[in-house]
Amino acid sequence: MTRLKPLTERYGQHEESEPERMRAEGLTTARSGPVGLLRDLQDLYLLATFSDITWSMLLQAGHALRDDDLLDTVGVCEPQTAAQLRWLRTRMSVTAPQALIAAE
Image (cartoon, rainbow, N blue to C red):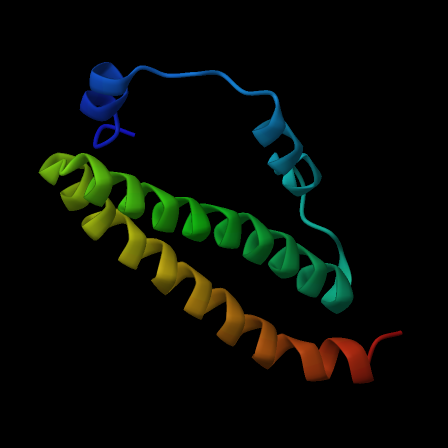
């Protein structure tokens, strides 16, 4: 959030109600069992994908504005989100067979 603060101060912050639907309300507690874990990982993956595409849009805005600060921020933050997506995908791949085949 500290990386975004100078950018929100420069460009302002417009509150939208639409992103509220992407809240992780269902993730306040972990689901139980192997299938529950798989569902939690899926939900996290969806949220991370939303973040990833947002970084892509901000990258395009940074290019259009020729804003090096914005481009630098995206350059640092987007790879972190990509790494999170890779980790989640790997974890789901490892979890899915056991959760789906041996589920009770």
